Image 1: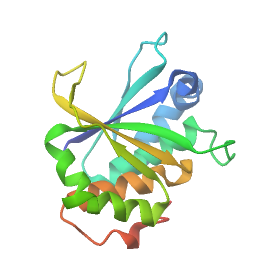
Image 2 (image 1 turned 30 degrees about the vertical axis):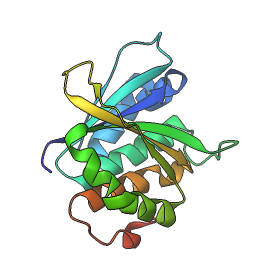
Image 3 (image 1 turned 90 degrees about the horizontal axis):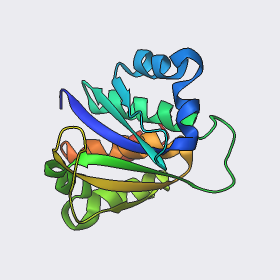
Image 4 (image 1 turned 90 degrees about the vertical axis):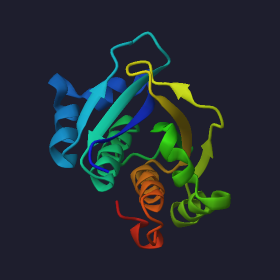
Length: 167
């Protein structure tokens, strides 16, 4: 899993919260998660893409948790469930879903986060690599845990229930 990159689409209106004053938010995400984070510059778009690249699933899910908490105002509970769309390499999506959707079902049961996966791949605008979008909807505090469980399940069918609430 070394060098795994996962993209996430965040509302453009939340980009400033993620970046922070003088880039302090991005620096915090980099420092705490040991991930490289790149945020698209297209401020006119409805969503901005953030790519996190890290040495392991744990690092990336930790970075995604930090990003979600910043994007959705940290400990303040939003009025309803939050939604984040993750962009995952197309070659990895089958493992994320699991046989008959079993992995996603375990993630949903463990975290309460609903997950929907696009059937058709898209080209990453930066690299041209094929990837698929996976929409996560639920409590912002569980987004990182849900991504961690989905990726860990894909990486070898490890027991995912023990990771729920890791954040």
